[in-house]
Length: 81
Image (cartoon, rainbow, N blue to C red; front, top):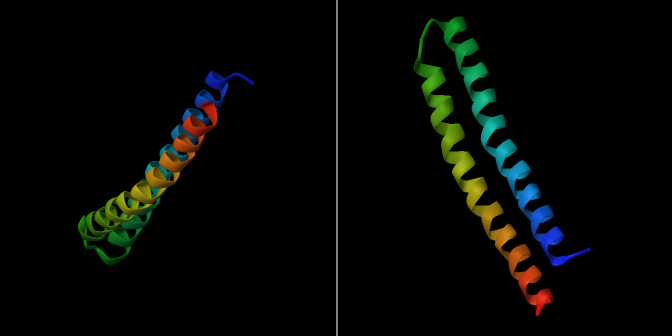
């Protein structure tokens, strides 16, 4: 495989991983928050609380994953030389 192929594969893996990391917690928090607000009549308390928690958790996970992918990118760069 060419070196460009390795970079494109890493980029696609990063894109897919980050997309899921952002979308899944946000959608789950929105659905659960709306359900809890409907059940307890607290519209939009639980929705906002869960979305804030999802945002905070997602940010922490993204930082950890970014560090992991930086290491993978640096390994590609090192192997290229």
